[in-house]
Length: 258
Image 1 (cartoon, helix red, strand yellow):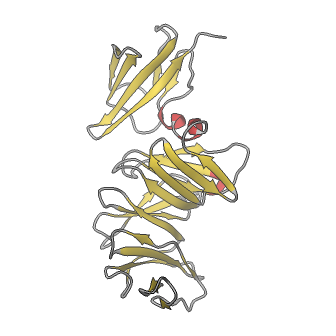
Image 2 (cartoon, rainbow, N blue to C red):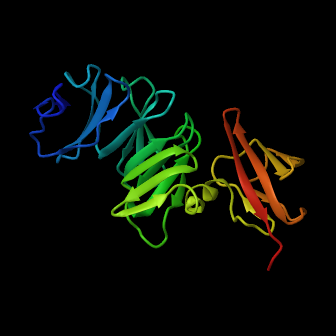
């Protein structure tokens, strides 16, 4: 649909579905370019693209599973949340597409990228997947252990700010629900008595700082499990470097309490 210049009183019909399928949410890349997914009863899904604000549409992708929400990262890469744990992506505004996998069969309904590398995909069972390498690898997280509602919409403006919605439930992506979203993807358990696991893509370098900004220790090509038991209890900042463009920081609480 495209509104006429009369405050939306009339509309022009631009795409017609005669198959009994459904269209997903339209995603605008800019003022003239937009994408929309179309899922048909036969199980084949299509992505349509317009470059003239909806006057004309062309098919740019198809898949044998549902294609749900479409978004793009700040650098212009297009992503689509799909069925069976898949994500489709395009580096050239839809001219060609490739498939990424979360490593799960969970159906994905929403996807959001907060920068060129870090994105989140939400799906069935109150599940969110996080990537920090443009979708090459994903870490699975659970937003809620009590309500297993499907995540139907992610709206994140940063790695720590936004909302996660699903079937009548809304969770904040910041405090107090931040522990469900970010720390499990970076380091756990947190707080810890010493042992710390770093899931996901292996790090090239780790740097541990105290709260005065002093460097306490570095690890080059560290294992995914490190031991902090030599340090006094308190709060530390762990800098995780996986590549030149993939650097993350997480606060770690070291506790000696039994």
